[in-house]
Image (cartoon, rainbow, N blue to C red; front, side, top):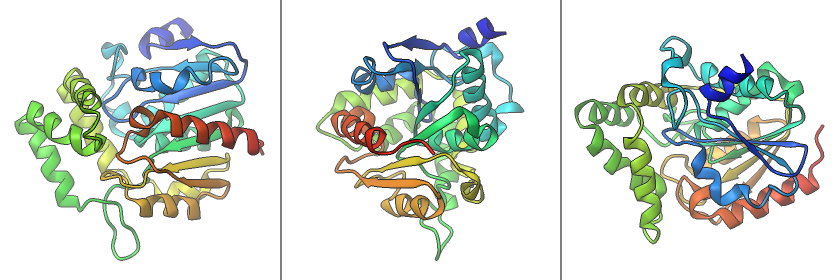
Length: 271
């Protein structure tokens, strides 16, 4: 079973430390997106990387439509990785939708986690006005999904620069677009629907693990209001507004991410 999880989720482990730093990629990405960040932590932590089933070099044969029709299925991937490696006292670092996935995993097994580090997270991408600014109207999401159905390559080339938002680093936008295009379009389409239509606001009060929210200053996917909303609704949370722009600061502004995580882990003991 353990070996199956290693292959299924393409697990990578390295580093000189004992406490696990578990990095979870965002929608349409694989573990490679963390390469600019992990080297700063490998001397002090055990670095654990993985791909969700259906992404990266995971075992596509393990993909199950029913399981992954809900973010809890992806949270089970996280818990399976922790079980396979017998991880404890885990510092979970999740980008975008993986922030919510990590929260769901921590609700199910809070004893496994010491901290959650949420990079550009969002509990709900759809506006619920006047009280909640998610960034998109439902029609916006439906049109994006429609574009995926009609012209997948066109969808990828449209969305990648919107997400990355750092035109001075075009190679990063190209990398993101390539990542989208290298993923099975049917699986990607389902993951997009699950991601963008999920509303996990009601789960936030159940999160008891201390968390760091890293909110980008200009983010077309997760507006700044979301960072403040999460901070208000996560009981043990710290909010850091970043200078970084775009939705992938771990790729475009890794130095800032590294510094903020290091400071947080030094100053915030686990509860």
